[in-house]
Amino acid sequence: MQSPLRSASPDGPGVGLSLILAVVVGLAILLSQTVFIVPAGNVAVVTTLGKVTGVPRGPGANFKAPLVQAISLFDVRTQVRPEQFSTLTKDLQVIEATATVKYAMKPSEAGRIYETIATDNQQIYPRVIQPSLLKALKSVFSQYELVTIATEWNSISEIVQEKVADELRKFDYVNVQGLDLTGLQIAEEYRAAIEQKQIAEQQLLRAQTEVLIAEQEAKRYETLNSSLDDQVLYKLFLDKWDGQTSVVPALPGVGAAGGPSVIVNGRR
Image (cartoon, rainbow, N blue to C red; front, side):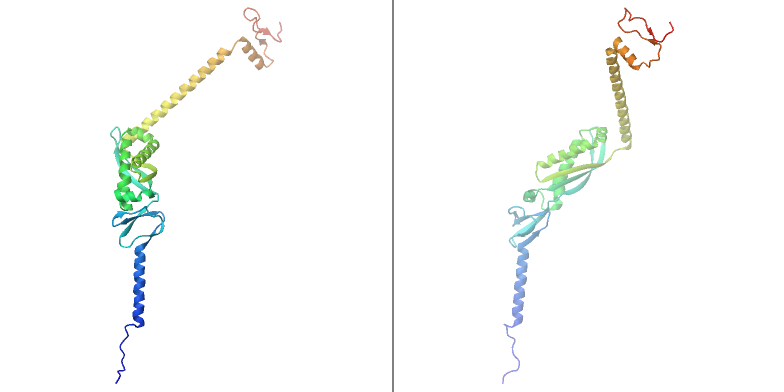
């Protein structure tokens, strides 16, 4: 007698669906290990078993060998980092300020950076920028006295920026796009001395200007006096004569002493 119960077939629809699902999951995992997306403003360094392979990859979809290749992203957009520092001046005074540096990593150098100095974004500033920045700051400020630094702050900022750019140019990892020095802090007694020096310099400049004006006026009058003679003076008198004055100077050149004055409308 045939049993009413049937054994489940190993080739039923449930097994086929599970197999398809497993294949899809396997392909998805393989695809995730093969395709990677580089965000805008970044480049990716691809390493094969720890060794940098090829050129840095640009934004968009990229491919890599699964399991044996890995990626490291680097941000190549402009970065702005403030750095608080203190240093000594030429006259051994301590100053404190903030240096805000703007820089951008060179995309083409991402592979070399990964191999030699930094393996991620967080290491770029402390290992590449900060040492050169602090070295430049100490080098520049040690050449100037405190009074000069306080009065020529903007000019010194430009010198520091060029010095930082020169230091980083030796390694050629990044481009320096700007540097601002702000928040200069010095001892109060030196600040008062600087203000007094500025006032004295302004007073000296004002005095020098007044002397220069006086010298120019003296030269002008000397030139004018040397150009005046009797003929010119007589002409100036006639130009200004109102026709009412009774006594008019004699015409120059008449007689040995120019002749007596001419009386106009006189009663004699």
